Image 1: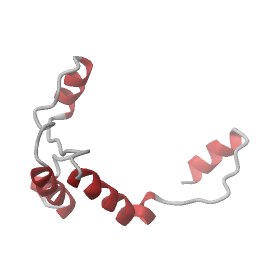
Image 2: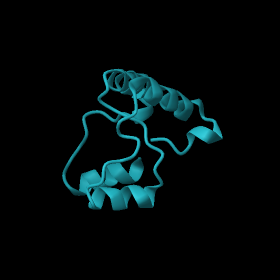
Image 3: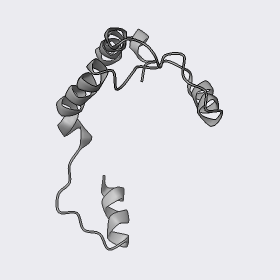
Length: 89
């Protein structure tokens, strides 16, 4: 945090308020659940290197067309903190 404020100061920027993402976890989680339930987001466990390659080649993820119910199941697994959930994003 201190280094960020220091860097901003070098640019002549003085923040009015310092906040932390963790202050908004519940709000972020609610938006994620809304987007998943509306079919606007999905969960993906593609390895990072493969995902980068697919994006560069404009290849659709194999997980892109999962149902909202399936995506929500994977989202809850990710949020559970269990080892099995670590691959999902």
